[in-house]
Amino acid sequence: MPELLLLDGRTKELIAIGSSIAGNCLPCLRYHFAEAIKLGCTIEDIKETIGIGKMVKERPINDIYKLADDLINREKEKSIKEI
Image (cartoon, rainbow, N blue to C red; front, top):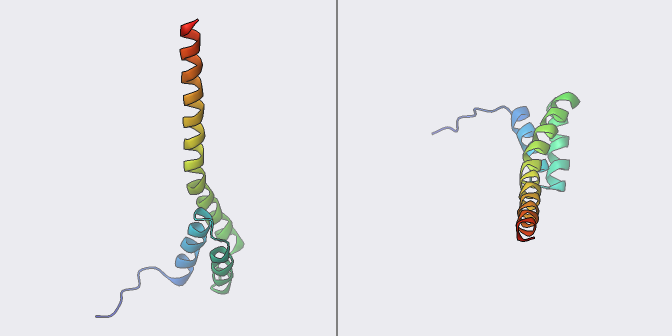
């Protein structure tokens, strides 16, 4: 059975760029950036994709920072109640 190709090469490379950003893969980003340019992706396309990858990557960082702040604030509240 022939493989169905639902995504074109440009779309696949843009997805790979976003995934490379989110996954911290430097060689992946270099490779997929070059491939995207070869396939005709614009710098604007790539910048938008990088922005999406950054948002995905930043989410867990923001969540861990919030948890750390919440834990500190809970301890502060306990200390105040003990006084």
